[in-house]
Figure 1: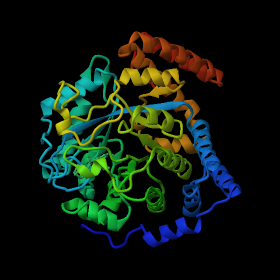
Figure 2 (figure 1 turned 180 degrees about the vertical axis):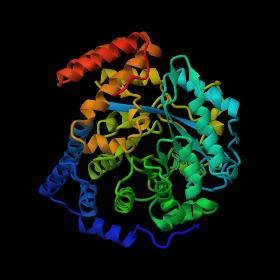
Figure 3 (figure 1 turned 30 degrees about the vertical axis):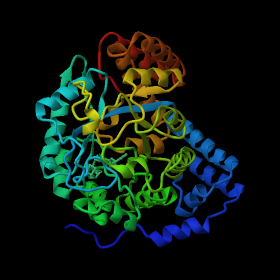
Figure 4 (figure 1 turned 135 degrees about the vertical axis):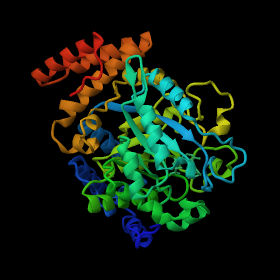
Length: 466
Ligand code: SAM
Ligand code: SF4
């Protein structure tokens, strides 16, 4: 079935919320932030009020609230992953994307299984444990193919390492097809709605299966029906008014909560980046400036306090540093989106890429900087391995969960990275941070166990977790 009966997005209603909450007072903003700090998801009126703040002082309050929420609920961990582009053939025509079918400038390429093994090995050898596999939409990239690529990635063992969690960013599927992909052991299935405004959506997606707004809007419902518990939503910022898109993400969240009892595992908020042969990508119709970008990230953090927030290397280094503090829980690092470019240097990689990246620093450089700033880089996959789906939700909802599980597991996976892949400088900064982190554990019994586990990692044991 290609279409659902009705949409959970009501444009007029969203516009009314935004209109009605045009000039929120300081007291109202403070109340809303407090509600979020008390770990409640915000409602559309509240989010509209946050979005409508213009006064720089009030904006600063929102930033402060987002930073505080992140600190209180999630601590100082940042989960790291890398994108792995499998193929850029595509039958859609998304006007902003370098992979669209009508783009003659892009060089089409799909990794064969041997190349996929080489790419995975290259990523494992740099220290990665978590990947997101990315695919254009094409009959060649059907569910069997996606499942096969996932199996291949999991099968690779190199030295002390392996990929322990594979997430997917691909076209929406039918329930039966999602089941096949789930069988292969995926973590999160991500689909970005791009824009929640149906009229704008139509213009941005003129032909191909993706032209069907509702089929995409309900794509993650079908994933959940197929038993995929962790789903990731997102909007591509720059296509339409950013305030509307944040409301769309909120409506999507509420819809998933109402229908499945659980909201999205992650929210992504990419901004459009320049892509080869794609003029609109250099001058998006609703380009979002840096201040508004920070505002929207902080608002999303407060709006859905339980969800993971993903910031990608699309953004330039400086922005990444700032936005990280506003509630981001996952970033990619050491990313290369040229197809086949992790294992083979390719000066022409940009011709096969979907867009250009803002942060191309190697993983080790990013990790060193994170550690210097006091963040614990985490490659933890414990929840997924133990069948604990909805890890972000547990972190949020179960008192003490972060302290008992996430924080120690972040330390142990960071210790593995330092032992197996880090430069001497990163090792030095990182080891100091780990010792401090262990000393800071309040529960004496946990502190002792963590210390013992850390020793075991130093002595060569791997994949220890709580
Ligand atoms: N083809 C699948 C789809 O469209 O859902 C999945 C992969 S697509 C390569 C992943 C995401 O990249 C899209 O959902 C879109 O949000 C984003 N994207 C496309 N063009 C972009 C651009 N020029 N800059 C930044 N992100 C872009
Ligand atoms: Fe194809 Fe996805 Fe790019 Fe659209 S965004 S052209 S569907 S790869």
